[in-house]
Length: 99
Image (tube, rainbow, N blue to C red):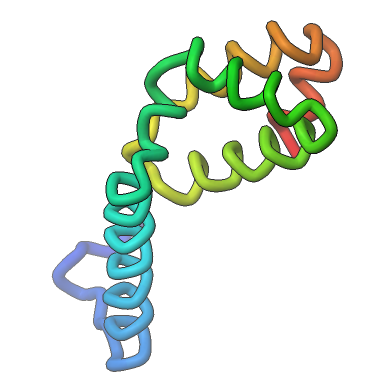
C-alpha cells in the first residue's frame, strides 16, 4: 500500500539532517570549483595526467575521486570510470571504481 506524500511527516531531526546533507553537497561542490578540481571530473586528459604524475598514489587518488563523485551527485561519473579502465585496465579499473 502506497502512502500519499501529504501523509508523510518530517520531524525536526529529519529536516535538520536533510538541510545538513544539502549544505555539505553544496559546500563540496563550491570547494571543488574554488580549488579548480572540478575539471578532473569533466576532462579525461587532465585526470590521466594527474594520475600519471602521482603514480605512487594513483590508486588512492582515483578511489578518492570516485568517492567525491558519488557524494556530489552533479559530478559526471563517466570520465572517472573511463579513466579507471584506461589507466588500471578493465579488471582493476572496475574493482577500483566500485570500492
